[in-house]
Length: 329
Image 1 (cartoon, one colour):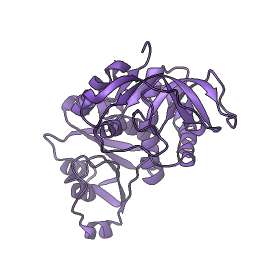
Image 2 (spheres, rainbow, N blue to C red):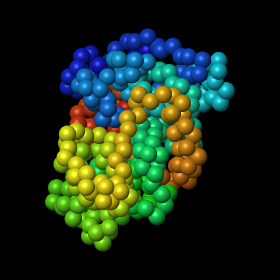
Image 3 (cartoon, helix red, strand yellow):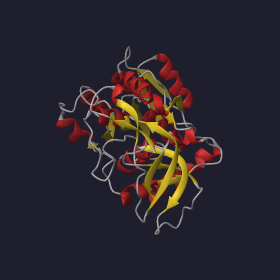
């Protein structure tokens, strides 16, 4: 099969098209003929040599989410059959013509969505559900602040939280990105380049703060996040783009009864990810089918131009998801 491989750690140019063996698959797995693959920041980190995959995943082929058609099924697989259209969360190997997937990590592609649109869903939707709803315990009627609202994670979090009855605020780096997020359902976009999100959140909430913050930034955002949380609020960091070493005023944590929790998803086992898939199908997939939640795909690149796709991801010039199209590779 053809695949996009990391030839050595480095810049986008190290992504090259190569011939690789078609992966085998276990009795509880399916083999998917990949039609499209989403691009995510962990792919960029892996390409740079900073985010090695789990031992069971391909060390050379990045890619954490795919959409395609099931080519073969393992002997213990009962739900899926050859020819089914699925999107799936994978631990690696997504930038390829074929990818093996545990059956529980597959989700059916709604009839109203394309392969391109469906490939943009798994990594962000699994991440948001796990961190915002399972760990962060966001409830209807509560408020959520999402840093990086125009990212893939951000556009998923806005729509999912809004659909389930929460109020959403976001930060983004331009007025256009803020307005885009407001059109998706955010009550207020905060341009971090000319506004102080702590001050704006205080104004919006009568100084009460928000119930939950989903943070990809870390660094000097952390103390501001803690001050922006309501009593019994929850801070959920999922990345540390501005640094992992932070100053925390524990008196605020104690006084407000705050919770700080976080997670990584890639190294969790199949059973854990399968439970998330079940919850997504139960609670979120109906909104995709009805059109209340929509995939946000900004740019589609032919798979052979994966290097250009990674360069765009690193520039943060996109809104929503970047997807690789494997048609005609």
